[in-house]
Image (cartoon, rainbow over all chains, first blue to last red; front, side, top):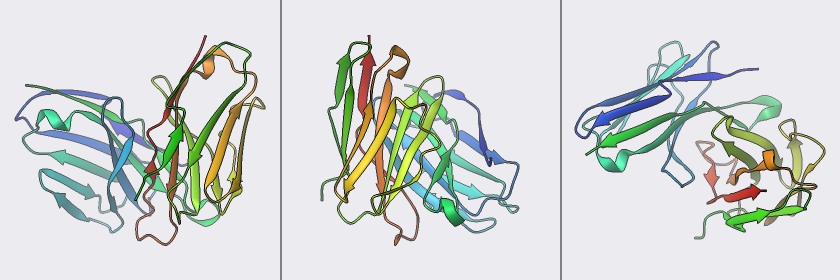
Length: 113
Length: 115
């Protein structure tokens, strides 16, 4: 079935460095969502992208959806220790699977102070 | 407004015992999802409901797992009999089809340990 691959699996950065995680699909996606899960916590919705080439910003976070709608990225500028956690991309299916999300494996971000 | 509520938060049980996990979705949400999260397999969808009706249970590992949603405000995930490999964090999530984005709201999870 349709899957997404996230890279890297792990990322260790010094506080103040930038961070980027990528989500890639072999097929065209109708949308992409991003979630953040703090250590010991639960996934929390960050944003959804639906348009080809879409770029959205939330403070230090920049989300992009590729022109071909097969890839997406999340970029964090000047990381802080509060950014620690696992970042997941996910896409929603349509048709008979409406509402169902398929999650990537996630990128675990560690920020060293 | 309260978020998704799950109970218990932690469960430790012995192999062979029955385990029941509970979930109360956000009021007004018409989708409910059960996920399992482990280091090895990541976040896996087990089953989901729409308007209390199971839509897709293809992620349920085996017959030992069952889920019910008797009404719009309550769902259970039961494991009988439990095995050590069932140890994981189980999340319940809900969403509303009328949202612009089909974002899912996750509960705090139940950490299950089967010894």
